[in-house]
View 1 (cartoon, helix red, strand yellow):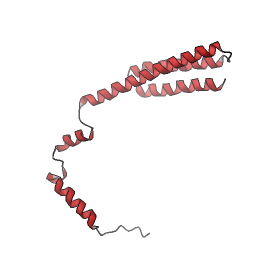
View 2: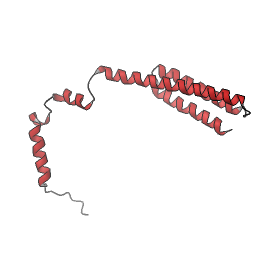
View 3: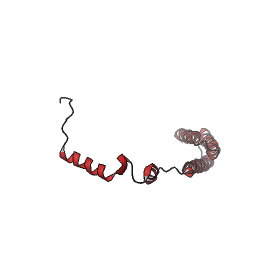
Amino acid sequence: MSGRADSETHPEISAVDEVSAAAVPDGGEDARGAEGAADAEGHGGDPQDGAEVARRARWTAAGTGVLLTLAGIAACLLRLRDSAPALVPAAYAAGAAVCAGATLLGHRGRTRRALWLLIAGVMVMALGDQSD
């Protein structure tokens, strides 16, 4: 392999370039304009898009935190009833408390921190389950 680029233009490539240049007027800008092209791609300039995404992220973080908190509390109560070492229900309770804190952070809009706390809470619960 010589590393040299081929300087010849193949006929099929040049034909495609001519067709695309003829289809787009005004030197490469779409007929709808820059805003129309952005809207067609789904990345419009609607100011509510960012707010809607943030709202959805807050609800997701808070909802996941609530579900993991309830699961940790339920597992803690079930392990308290069994003859498990005391570390196991304590780990479930601690993980549920961390997930409850993540719920509050997610509700306030700190979704990245909430995500990391949810991961930490589940890891604490998993480590408690492994110690059984």
